Image 1 (cartoon, rainbow, N blue to C red):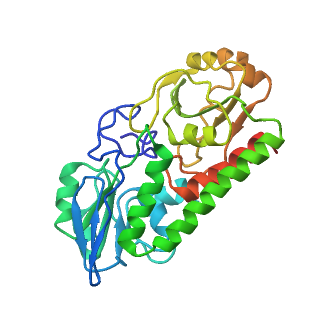
Image 2 (spheres, rainbow, N blue to C red):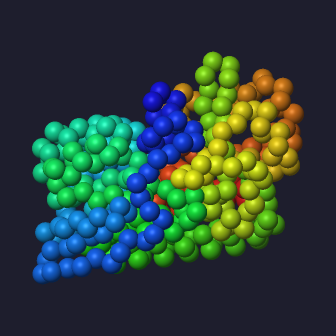
Image 3 (cartoon, one colour):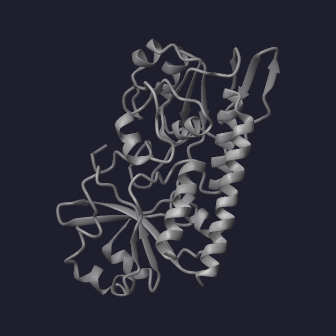
Length: 324
């Protein structure tokens, strides 16, 4: 995966739209407990037994790391600490956290040396890595994304991690706060006359003079959040069945029409492909939302594939951008 793609979720196959997962869209089964022991049924339908609520936890993907931190569990090991710090600022890491390698290929030896009680992975992690890590410590898998039910999948993941770490009360509080954030954001947008406003969200990257655009279309977590906020997506293309992501170029932006264009970029990932890469592009300058100055870059560090903390952060940033 090139440096222009490394901040995206770790996926199998092509970076833009092909995703392979081993999870299901069904909510995890209820856990059972015997004494202090816990049996967790993860997204694979696999029952994983823990001696008790996990305290020393390793996370192989940023969304599960965010959920751990949000739930008050400081992970002992995290994949790509530098990347997490740059791209997910909603739940900062504290204390001494060991970098276990890349999200797609964590170091088994490094994880083993940490002597974790639990490893939390997503179904984007290659099966071979899951097998190897499962020999080190109990491992649960959460489904990374589901374009049919993104918000529900996100909260399912938080609840599953909470069960494994004994933080169910904290999970209920965090999920309730997230839902209240959505409700408040919707009220603020409606008060600004933006109920039903068309909002197209995207990110992208630049290679030479070519800018590639990744629309977050129907089925993406961001579009699901926007829908809950009373906004409408003008994207008409179809996304993948995992993340609800599509692919286009600057010409594809002509199909958006008169809408608000909102995007995310990061200074850690070669700058801004829209403001910098397209500033002299005739097609870009002709777009209605460019002419009307309805282009909004959100602050760096909002992880578009995160949990309740990132999505609450996103709601605040979007409301600030659209209704300052």
